[in-house]
Image (cartoon, rainbow, N blue to C red; front, side, top):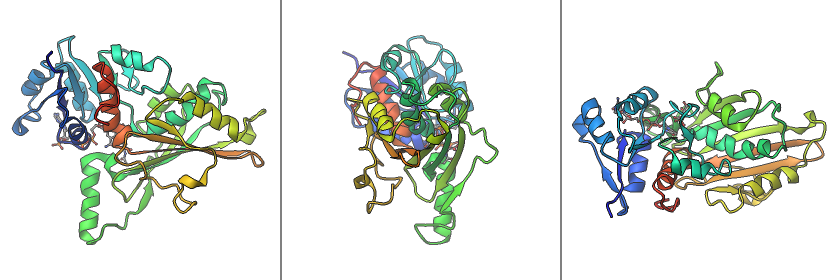
Length: 322
Ligand SMILES: NC(=O)C1=CN([C@@H]2O[C@H](COP(=O)(O)OP(=O)(O)OC[C@H]3O[C@@H](n4cnc5c(N)ncnc54)[C@H](OP(=O)(O)O)[C@@H]3O)[C@@H](O)[C@H]2O)C=CC1
Ligand SMILES: CC(=O)N[C@@H](CCC(=O)OP(=O)(O)O)C(=O)O
């Protein structure tokens, strides 16, 4: 049987390189590459885009839209890693664990959008609670999150590399900063649409002086609810939702053993994996809870998720290469 052919448009970028490294060693697929000199040549890209079984787009949004417009064969499946189509009609959202039946939709779709890194962590925590009625859809959700600087792609990596170079140090004068302070970050619409919340979440992202890794925190002021769930109920609802899932792992409730020195939840502990870990911390006396997702922004937050989706789209075991 012929091996499925895959083309990564944007293979030389941060996400593209990481997908390439996960696929390169596999002998069940054939990777089709573009000559470096023709990376941005629309004719050459169109040729390759139309001759493969799956095209994976690892491009800025506008270039991803252009790539989609270049595809004229209904035989070509497209997996887009950009923000361009994550809330678009006709596209299936590529988060297999998010809803029962999502895997089948991904398997049968021509157009699949790979989720954003922050939305992956956010939805992993919140979607089960909304879907099961543990939190009302009207709950005013806020999100604080921190990403490693590779989340900003090549340009932010270069910026941090030059900080480190100037200071001849592995760290810089930019250890941690919040951004998105005009609100309306590009991920808010995606988080809103797929969560089932009535209103958009209020999202404040941050970037830290570490290359990869991410924490997405959702504080829950449960005292605002008439009949608040207990911490155990929240934890159980999430743990049950993901029972049997390999790549979404729910940590034991309020358990300090997964914290560094029993105290710190660090952002980098699942780097290099395709796992998103979900934590629930709560104090029923004060009616406070905190949901946290920990993931590799380039793993389950981008390239790992893309390989998982690719496998599903090809009808292969979804953990191949991960
Ligand atoms: N980094 C991350 O953590 C995540 C990224 N993503 C998404 O993945 C996509 C790629 O991001 P990322 O890899 O970080 O970005 P990078 O900037 O690292 O890579 C983008 C690549 O696309 C190339 N490119 C730009 N325009 C064109 C074009 N017209 N034709 C062909 N190639 C082009 C760039 O080349 P050149 O540099 O020469 O311009 C570069 O190699 C983005 O949409 C991003 O939102 C998704 C989840 C997480
Ligand atoms: C640290 C940093 O800059 N992060 C990026 C988000 C990562 C990304 O590229 O977003 P997608 O997941 O949608 O592709 C940002 O906030 O714009």
